[in-house]
Image 1 (cartoon, one colour):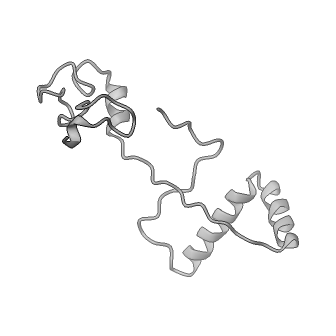
Image 2: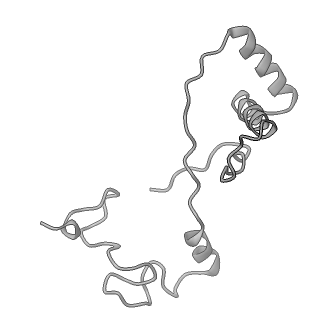
Length: 116
């Protein structure tokens, strides 16, 4: 059995999406998922670079330090997590150690749902 015969991780049928981008599974342009039957907004959304996954870190803090951070964050209308991210970025920038390929801070609010 080849890779094309096995279902994908997303549960697509065998061979689905096997053709090059912009083509249907036979390699021809047209009615495929990226063909001419999409709107410009849909095409732009598909060609946008994916956001990098944010790292999750377990951070152990003294309760008094956490409370102080939480009060500071509330005063600036941020979550405690966003305040820690802001302070770490600021410290790295001030020390000249912020990597050049660092993405922008996360957008405010709840992260978008992942599409199935």
